[in-house]
Length: 82
Image (cartoon, rainbow, N blue to C red):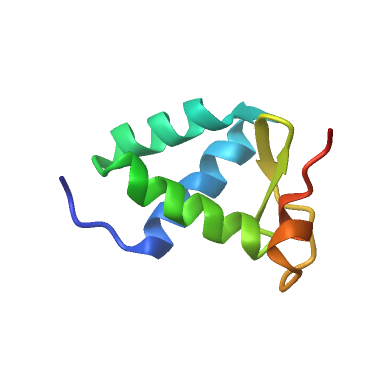
């Protein structure tokens, strides 16, 4: 495994979500983990942080570039729709 900063992982997550209008969560985690040679857990932690701070938005099973204002609550940042 390669040492990579949380900021670098978040940047990779943002890049991947901007490349595609929507991306499946599992595909996003796998892609970033393989590209950056880090664990899925590390990527998942940074994905959660990015969701919490509004950098990314979760809609059903997809992740998109964030449209949620920063510093909202974790539940609002997830913006889960049923």
